[in-house]
Amino acid sequence: ACRIPGAAFFDVDATDVASPLPHMLPSDAFFARTMSELGIVHDDHVVCYDGKGLFSAARFWWMLRAYGHPAASVLDGGLPAWQRAGHATESGPHAPVARASPPFEARLDASLVADLAKVRSLVDAFQSGAAPAQTLVDARSQARFEGVAKEARAGCRSGHAPGSRSVPFDRVLQADGTMRPPEQVAAVFAEAGVPGVDAPLVGSCGSGVTAAVLALALEHAGRASLLEIYDGSWAEYGGDESQPLATGPAPPA
Image (tube, rainbow, N blue to C red; front, side):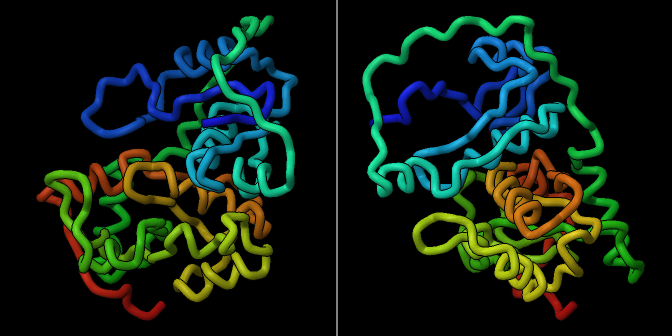
């Protein structure tokens, strides 16, 4: 294992919220303390990357934005792209980071976080024949969305929330793990029946990570506002037998 020289490690699983669901958003105080321990201050521009290319880094980027730190970017293609470009890496123990001063301040924008009740209201509106206030976009694979592939999480059903649209996160990426050009990203959403990159949307996925890749892609394609994300995602909805379930492809838009 290696890293970009001088990089600090952020654990997307770290939280102080007791929940059976994976990597739920932490409290403001926990996130602020974690950022301060990483040496991050208010004026810093944070560049996020991961070892896969473009995956969990988008979740960290989205978290920074959601907690009120707009100066954040994602390294396109992550560590693999860095290495392909011939840049240096380092390994071994990480040097201690001086705690940030003044301390990082965090305040989660609750309007960017959807819960189960919000998602159920969208499903109910769809099933009643009304126009939902927002469209749920699902970043899981097409096979999981259609219910033909089992979910890895025990007790989690396969399929999707009625009325949602399938936008597998890897479709907004190129073969080398970098983001597609803006016009191609916009086309991916259009082909999925999403009514424009600035449409009222809620992102979902398996556990709240790859929905952030869609958030990053939408901003890349020109979306003016940060995508709202269902934090519990399919781990919560699919694991609740009382929630309506659909299988097969999404109906035509």
